[in-house]
Amino acid sequence: MVKLIAAFASLLIWLVTIDIRLSYGTITDVFCLRTLKESIEDPLGYLSSWNFNDTTEGSICKFVGVECWHAEENKVLNLKLSGFGLTGNFPSGLENCSSLTGLDLSSNNFSGTLPVQISHDVAFVTVLDLSANKFSGVIPESLANCTYLNVLRLNSNQLTGMIPPRLGLLARLREFSVANNHLIGLVPTFINSTFMESSYASNTGLCGPPLKACQGFEKLHAGIIAGAATAAVFLMATVLCILFICCSRRVKKLKKDDDLEGNQWTKSFKGLKRVKARLSLKTIY
Ligand SMILES: *[C@@H]1O[C@H](CO)[C@@H](O)[C@H](O)[C@H]1NC(C)=O
Ligand SMILES: *[C@@H]1O[C@H](CO)[C@@H](O)[C@H](O)[C@H]1NC(C)=O
Ligand SMILES: *[C@@H]1O[C@H](CO)[C@@H](O)[C@H](O)[C@H]1NC(C)=O
Ligand SMILES: *[C@@H]1O[C@H](CO)[C@@H](O)[C@H](O)[C@H]1NC(C)=O
Ligand SMILES: *[C@@H]1O[C@H](CO)[C@@H](O)[C@H](O)[C@H]1NC(C)=O
View 1 (spheres, helix red, strand yellow):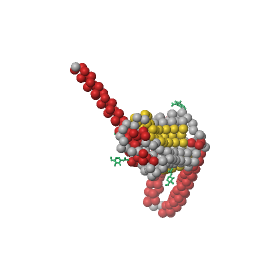
View 2 (cartoon, protein in one colour; view 1 turned 180 degrees about the horizontal axis):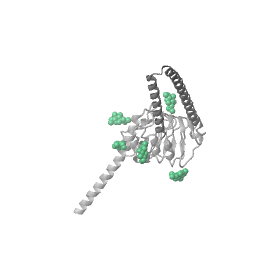
View 3 (cartoon, protein in one colour; view 1 turned 135 degrees about the vertical axis):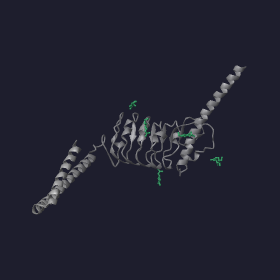
View 4 (cartoon, protein in one colour; view 1 turned 60 degrees about the horizontal axis):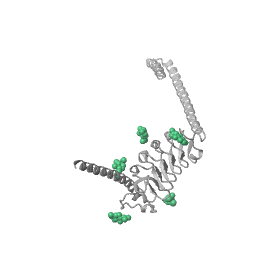
């Protein structure tokens, strides 16, 4: 009898545990979509089917743009919100869709910068499509931590700065585009793939294979160095000339006057020279 009660009790505990685990998953993904919807604007009303009053398991799987792992379980697999006319900043709440493998926000009117911690928001995505929006600012280096990425589309935005070289470490990447932005500098070297020129087209100043070598930058650099060197030489020559003229005048005057003060001045000038020589020796060693 005691055994039976114990068995029944453990069965009960097991059921309760499972229920807690299920509802925890549910709460998290529902919370994710609710936060996402609240964080953006939906002027065309595409997300009006996202009604969170229905709390049954699998309810969010019927929302437009939402794909679940199983139709009867509130666990989001993919979010496909392309061309919905959505506006606002990069959505919030995505970190609570913890089983998300694909995020497509392409062809909307999203703007503002991409979150620095984007790899925390969408850690397991294999497809990330943010193309054809108005995202600005730099490409977050943390994207390099989304190690499952197969497809990364950032093309047709207003992104600036350089492409983080660490993106080259994304070993599973087989599609990549940053075309049609305002990017500059050397393109990354990818450890397990090469991308065509079209991936980089229409930017402000990208260079390096497969594009043209970064000659423009090197020339500019060389030009700056040459210019600075010329200026330095000119300045030194001018200073020397002035010193020479001053000295010779002073020496002439001294020779005329031949006073004590003049001798002191020449001495101190010589001393200064010695100090200067010592200083330059120090900077060499
Ligand atoms: C959402 O994610 C944050 C950060 O991981 C976590 O602290 C929070 O508890 C989550 N919220 C829900 C409702 O799961
Ligand atoms: C959801 O429920 C609230 C109150 O519980 C109600 O005011 C609202 O109209 C409901 N929304 C929809 C779309 O059914
Ligand atoms: C973005 O907004 C502009 C108006 O501000 C509108 O003309 C355009 O169609 C929108 N684009 C998309 C993709 O919704
Ligand atoms: C990326 O991952 C590495 C190693 O896990 C970690 O040290 C680093 O802080 C992460 N960087 C970002 C920007 O998340
Ligand atoms: C490199 O890419 C190939 C396919 O292009 C893939 O099968 C392989 O796993 C990748 N290597 C690594 C280290 O991810």
